[in-house]
Image 1 (cartoon, rainbow, N blue to C red):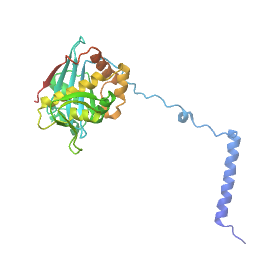
Image 2: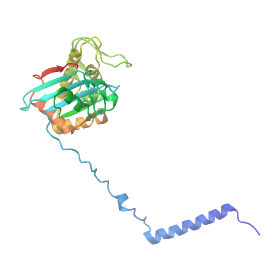
Image 3: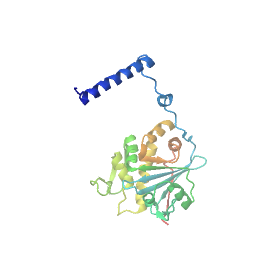
Image 4: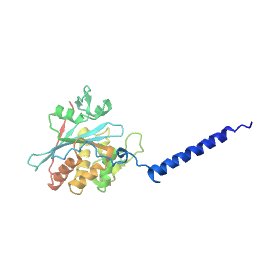
Length: 266
């Protein structure tokens, strides 16, 4: 008695199975695939986390972070309650603070010890200065903002290296210059060992003022520009709140008469 090879048995059973399934498909679905459950095909539901509405802020902390995640600059923009004056408080990054879950650390190293969460509150508590909102800008974020306003003009009082250690050497020379985003960000963030902290902070202020003063557009447009920075920038308030403050400082022409001071190291 002949025996049927195994592969023929497998082939025959497969054909029968396909026929049965096809019949059911036509009988039940009239030639159409059965619909998927509604919970799978439904449109995505909006997130339950509703964005916090924008609010007016008067005190904004701007923090610059280098490629090694060190805080290299802290500037607090303080608008008067009447909205007619601006003060810029520069904070030495070597000042000691106590961020949540950490001991005393220099501001410059606060993120390296944990995260940047709560750094603004620690600075506010240490200085006794209320901070309504903060924005942390990576070097690439600052460069992007500068390129977004077409570069900035600066007047350098010396020769400064604007590239970090390990990068090809780039310099800004003495005199007037129009800087692209990369060079201008370095000019604001790379401190020379031959200059004082006060001299370095003056350079940072020069760049921040030029960038924020030249951000064109209304609140919505400036907010859109800030939001486009993505993960390179982090803020604890809606970008619209920051945009409203920056636009107001520009429209009221408060930058030229700003009172600039420095908080010394502890």
